[in-house]
Each structure stands twice: as structure tokens, then as C-alpha cells.
View 1 (cartoon, rainbow, N blue to C red):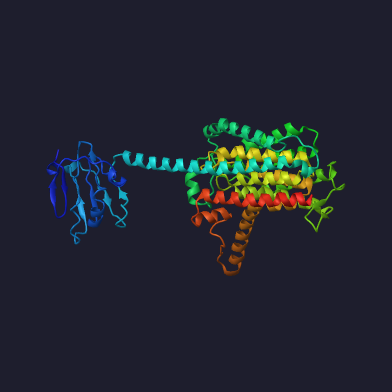
View 2: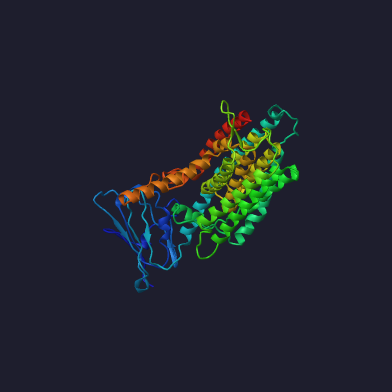
Length: 504
């Protein structure tokens, strides 16, 4: 076997003449790639060697032995020396070459490897870096989740303490807090059981190519259909507490499950191996409109109790008061179902964004409808608790997505609460995040099509729609966007609850 040499231009040193030293890591991970019985050429500027002389202290392990590199403190004194070349030769059995071309003095360069040896050490270091980031993400997501659940708990406890002043009736203790915590605890435990099952069944989300590239890399192996874990729980807890005597809760539960079925069909078709993205947009909207019309007709014929003595009324703050829409109330109900379902669906693009904002909206609607239908307020609190329990698995970085099964169901439940009580204005206020997301898509598409028809080239107002993707491409981190949306939605929910109480 030929002797190994390090050739330094213009200096030539034998490997055996190098003094023995042990070097422990702070060497850049690129130098770990210098491994195996191969020939390597590294072109490193002298200034880089001078700056990183203490950093470049790492043993280069070879298959047939090892040698140590001495301190390189005095190698970069000559400013005219532009580069050094280090090579190791084994004669004819030498493999390829690895060339390091640093783009700047502060950065170590990418490496082109033609050798057949596995870069196990570099792979391990990069894997450890990813795990460290993952730990930070989990802590950050848990911190945001704890803050949201704490806010919801305090909000509901305050309402329960003052409920007798709101409805002028003696309500049970923890009237809204009890269904909230029941749904949250059950949904969280069910998630711990079924999320691994979803992983084993490979129920992975199909990430659209139109979205951010980072999502297609990091979220393509995350299972979907998480709505199956928490939507039935929220409905079941509400029915258990209220019973079957309340027709408003029964109707809201039925339409929620109907929208969940539409989303389940969409998610099921999207899991096919031919990269299908689910139901066509027109077919899905048709099904949503059909369910909304059926619910409107049922609402018109059902004997729903109302403190106003008649149907088709929308309570608004003073000085507007009650506004009678007549038959237009049915059209408003159908439009509310379609818009809310798609609004929540568009918002479900970041980990925890749709679930957290939906929980805040449900709590606001529960307080708004409390003077009109107290049983329907229990339904809203139960759905909010189910969303909070699901957030334990959907927080950043998410273990599962709710999918269309969950997003459409949440939108249908919110629309049902507003349709049964006429509280469309508080719903519009509390769901401000959903409205912004939906409007951003409408404005983006309309502007692009209009400018393309006029000038032949489409112009985009946002970098990407919905609006949360625009913020991502502007440089904001995903947890920061979600936390900001929670804060905005919390203020909107407080204002919507106040408007609902004053309107009723």
C-alpha cells in the first residue's frame, strides 16, 4: 500500500512527521466528510485557515488508520497565499475527489463527494441538529397551547360566575366550563390512542405543490383526518349533557356531522396514490350548499323556541335592534354555511391555527347565544373543548392534521349556532381570522384573473394566498403567526361576546 502524504502548496509534509495531537470537536461538519481510502483536494483560502485555526482541530479518521492534524495557527500569515491543497493518495486504488469551494470567508463550503463511503458522522450531526430544533418547536407550541387553554378557562369561569346576571335564570354550577373540560380531556386521550394508528395506516396529508416548499418537505408524512378524533366527541358530550329534548342542539349536531362526512369524503379521495387532491371544488360546494338548504328548510319548519316570538329575526346592537329578513333569512343561512366551512378550511394551513381560532370563536358564540338558547351554549362550549383537546396533538410541530373532516365540520357547527339564534353579527366578528383568510384568497384570485385578461400578465397582491402563507414568505415563523392570530382572535371574541349579550 502506498504511503499517505499531505501535500501543501507550497509546503510538502509527510504524515509521519506531523506531531501527535488529539483534537476534539469544533471543526465544521464538512471536514467529517474527509473519510475513507480516497484522494481529497480541499481548496481553502488562507484567511479562512487563519480565522478557523482553532476550529479546524478534528481527527480525520481513515479506514486503514488515523492521523492527527497539528495546530494551524501560523499558516495564514502570508496574505498573498490564496489557497492550500491537501491531498492523500493511495496509488491506483484511490477513489474520487472532494472539492471544497467556500463562497465566503465566514462560511465553509459545500462538498462534492464522488467517493462511495457513507458519511455516517455528518449524517448523525445533522440529525442531532434537527432533533434540537424539534425540541424547541415542541416547547414553543406547548407554551402557546397552554396560554390559549388558560385564557379560555378563565373566560368561561368568569361567565359561569356571572351567568345568573346574563340570563336571569339560575344555571347549574360550571355550566359552560364543565362541557369544555369534558370534551378537552376525552379528545386529548383519544388522540394519544389513535394518532399512532393513523401513522401506521399511512393516512398522510397530500401537500399541494402550490403551497410553500417547506411544507411539502416537512409535513408530507403527517397524517390527516384528525377531525375524526374530536368532532364526534364534541357532539357526543353536548348531547349527553343536554339530552335529546333540545331540538336546536340536535339540529346543530346533525349538520355538523353532515359537514364532517363531506370533509371525510374529500380526505378519503385525497389519500389515493394517483396524487388526487380530493373532491372537485364544484362538487364540494354543491354538497355544502345542499346541506345548507336542507338545514334552512328544516329551520323554517321546526318549532324552535325564540324569545322574540317569531322567526327570521337578526338581533343587532342598539339603535338597530331586531331586523326581520323574512325569506331572505334562508338565503343568509345557506350562505353562512358555505362561507364558514370554506373559511375554516382555508385557515387550516398552519399547525394549530384553525383549531385555536375555532375554539375562541366557539366560546364567543356560546356566550352570545346564552340568553337566547342556553342549551346551544353548551354545544358551543363542548366543541371548543374538543378543539382544545385536539390542539395537544395539532400544536406546532403537529402530530396530525384535522383535514377537511375537521375544518368543514367546525364551520358547519358555527353556522348552525348562528342560524338557530340569529347571531350572525357576533359570528362575523368572532370569526375575523376566517374572514381575512377567505377574503385574501378571493382578492388574490380576482386580481390575478383581471390583470391577466387586461394586460396578458397576472399580477398578485400577496406573495401567496391565504394570508398566513404570505406572512410565511415574508419571513415570519410559523409559531409567531399562530400566536399572533390567537391574540387577534381573542380580542375579537371578547368584543363579539359583548355585542351578542347587548344585542340579546
